[in-house]
Image (cartoon, rainbow, N blue to C red; front, side):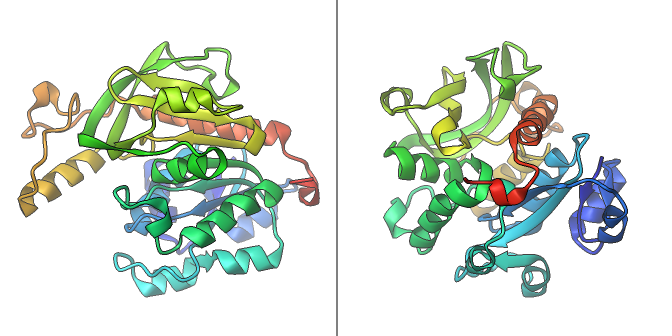
Length: 307
């Protein structure tokens, strides 16, 4: 089954050209099934790029997905056209007031790692989002800073500033081969990493109810399950395109910002060569497993979500 998107959303054409099945509103109405309602709370400055990345992953399953784009109510973006935001995004305040519920929500990262959580301009509203997920969302997926913020809110696990940016593609160990989220995973896998902060395994282990599913000896915990809050937290970037790390590297080089060549990304660590995508299959596995778990466990009657 395809992902349901507005036909004029840029992701509709991008994914169609890639062979991902997409469906317009009118087509979806003719299918006598309930689509899974998945929200994307997009905190990234390049909204369209992020929409494409996550739509690509959740749209590759055998289920019909209805994607809703959500933004923080008062936070303004300077990197995406106002017309795009007005047409495709709803502020969280409006979503909350509507009383609607979601089978799943993805909360993205944001380029504000160095800031204390309390200093983030929309922190109070984001805390409202976290609380709202407990009554209006069946399963929440916090990504990078979004995952760090959520695990901090519910468990007090802190983020720590690194001496140097963790940047590149790092091997991670499968810590629980029986987890339904890791169904089909190899014993280890490569995941893109791009962050100035880290979460620490000993602090995660000290928090009640958390379980680390993917871990790297070099860059620490990656994927953490929080069943008590219906959540997954991932601190790295399975959703990245093949050239996302290249874009970050080229930008920093052009701006004169000190940056190391991303580890294990270019062949022979030579940035003059095209980068290799070593994570795509596991990215689809993880998000496909998440969607499947939602499908198998979410109530058919959406009014029952959160009860």
